[in-house]
Length: 304
Image (cartoon, rainbow, N blue to C red; front, top):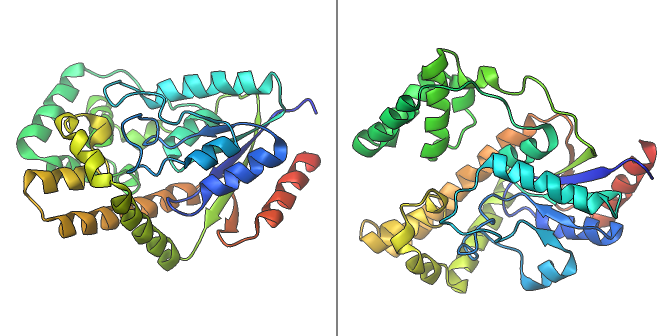
């Protein structure tokens, strides 16, 4: 087999991507590229649902807890590093597996990052000033007006993403979305997407159970140890920012946990919205027997 293949397992949080990815990796005797941007950080284990020790031993994983929250690490950095790692894997194997729910990072590896024009750095400075003094709502409202298409899919609670889009809108006078997906870069592998889906009620129930389990495993203690670093962008994420509010005395613990569940459900909904736009994805119900998905995977290889 001369052609190289990348099985790309996607879907919302808590749906079973890790288990399926391991099954694929074991079957094809290959490695897994993890593409969950929250699992990159060494200090964030419980709240990001890092695979268990047994799962990490079952198949070789890359890009799990490989950097510190103190380190700047962009989607462009990940694109570069993931492509280099794939070249290493493909020097010995014809197949690799990529697993994760971070849609932007998946797209960066498979298609390449969009190219945006340079804009005046003072725009970002003024937007950061607005964030500090007026809050995130003003950024949300402006992006909704300037680029409703991107606003419909962006993580509206992520100030970094809002500011990035707004600086392009303001600096160019054009919507951020108009610069996206103009063309895909040539890659040295053939992607085969496998998406996992489930009824919303099932996904939400799994999320609620996962959050309860995280609390039992010591998520609050993990967050306490990171309290002095809560200003870092990596920690402005679901499961951490809510408990920081508890530690600050703004919420009681019951409220914080309820907010984690609510915000994780919203996150899962955004993941569905992102991936549903990709017509290359072959969707399977989360309850589909893994043998059936493996049969599909093997047939795809031999039909290329």
